[in-house]
Image (cartoon, rainbow, N blue to C red; front, side, top):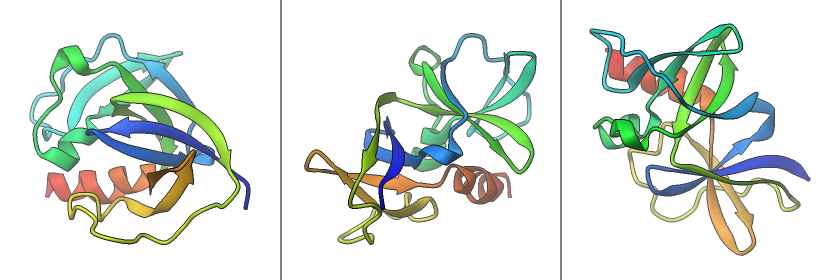
Length: 145
């Protein structure tokens, strides 16, 4: 299968995201904190007349918030009818991967297990294929509980 993927880094790990899940990638500017929310909710931000909930995805993985000066980029996605910005360390490329998704193999850090779907290989490197929806529907809900 010749699917299009966004390649990025998150919490120091190479990740791939199915491009069909991605609305945009934006540089974050102002994030307004929301009192009483979990460490994974960085706050709210505006984008083209919409309010985005900004999720510190690395906080879901590592358990501690990303420093404000390192909050640079976010992948914008519409998940269950809500707009989210999922923070990433950086974005490398958007490309087709002719071999498609490969099964997970080897040792997977347990922190990534709820979000990982498969592996994709690009230019000789493995990229962990993650689901953006899983960060919201699985991880964020679990953190809030």
